[in-house]
Image (tube, rainbow, N blue to C red; front, top):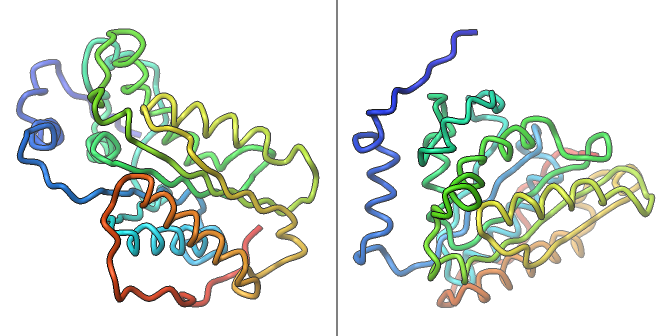
Length: 244
């Protein structure tokens, strides 16, 4: 596979850096933004349904919301080139270039994933690993990409489902998620953990669970200081496919 890389002189001219500058300007918009990361490869599966309902809740609380299907992004895993040690981005030229400013600009973040092999899916893990740019800025250069006044207010929600019904099933995913939230300067504020999905099957048959996701998303929006909107539907979304 051909690897595209960037030279050190590109930084000031790239669109993603221009978005950083635009976001950090005093004229940035006032509505709170919540980004939802879907780690499941099933775009209409149980994990996707829970994320959708959580985003519905955040939207009804007055936030602008955006869902990102991580498995649809084109990017490579971290190659440990350490370009980010001294620069605000990665040397690899792929879809992660548009994700860095998106993650930095978000007020709230929702990560939704199934458990796979007592951890999280490989693509989502690679996505998190590519956020080494935040790690290096924060811990190596002591110049976090998210300004102090913003990171003090950022809040996150972790949604995770598992097929098995054993006590340790969420230990690995939670450790990874908490590390990710810390690296990008977003508080791990709340979680929704649902095990026994092998038994439950299709989550649309369990409205109490999708309602829980909605309430968690709504609470996230409220925690960000969003202005509550009216008239948004709080009913069930479209049907989806079972997922473990």
